Image (tube, rainbow, N blue to C red):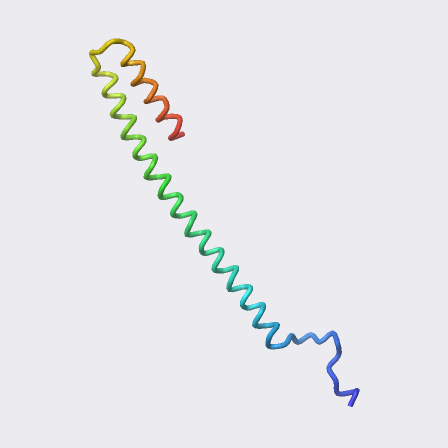
Length: 89
């Protein structure tokens, strides 16, 4: 009977061990998919935010060029435009 026993270093994993490995691989695949989706969403949000900043900058530039107010108003508008440029860079 001792001759028919499996060796301790059995190269064939048990059904439970194979199932555990498959489960771990599936969990990694799901995590990678979630991270990929999160990256795509983040990229879309950044794109939309930069578009908004471009619109704000254009409006401020137009207001700055059309302003017939004292110089300090132009300074405020210029500072806001510069800030929008910094954020979008």
